[in-house]
Image 1 (cartoon, helix red, strand yellow):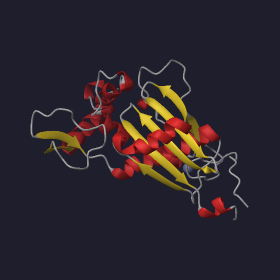
Image 2 (cartoon, rainbow, N blue to C red; image 1 turned 45 degrees about the vertical axis):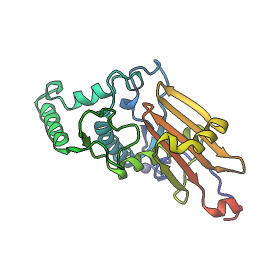
Image 3 (cartoon, protein in one colour; image 1 turned 90 degrees about the vertical axis):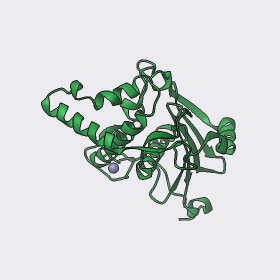
Image 4 (tube, rainbow, N blue to C red; image 1 turned 180 degrees about the vertical axis):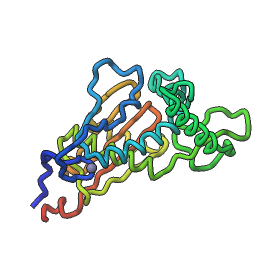
Length: 246
Ligand SMILES: [Zn+2]
């Protein structure tokens, strides 16, 4: 029998644990929305247990710090985000002495993490986050942990699926995430354009969602943040779902 994908009450949509006390989590963190977002938009929110909320919050803070520093301050699609990141590293913006010290510590940590790399690396540059300058041989770079990027993308998949199809991603579903140059994703882009339901949350913040006609649990989801960070995500249900046996 096919597994029924109904959402139960009191379930964390990320780890599927039953909890008496759930928190509300923003699928795309609030601070990632550009200042150019329409007023009063609903920022995708989902029920999450405290543990997952804290776990993803740490990952998101780490990613925002690093990715935010690579954004263009004058780009409307990330309006205010790089400024927010720089403020979080500014001791002068601290609410009190302790807060200022924490910001200073974080700034020193980030400064140590910035490395000089050859500008023309053949691999390893996050698509759309490389430098466009070609005047010198080297560029400043900061390492973004792949684990964090993938955990974040999988969280987005779970959250977006819950919101757009009122269903959960189960532990035996396989989530595959691809981060590649758009030119290398033409095939996916064509499918998304033809069959995808597009949800625009803000300038540069879009989610497109396609469920396979013959297997609605098989999904293709394109998530675009600041028009720079683009995830192509695929959900493969376990084979027994497709065969209709359990
Ligand atoms: Zn959880």
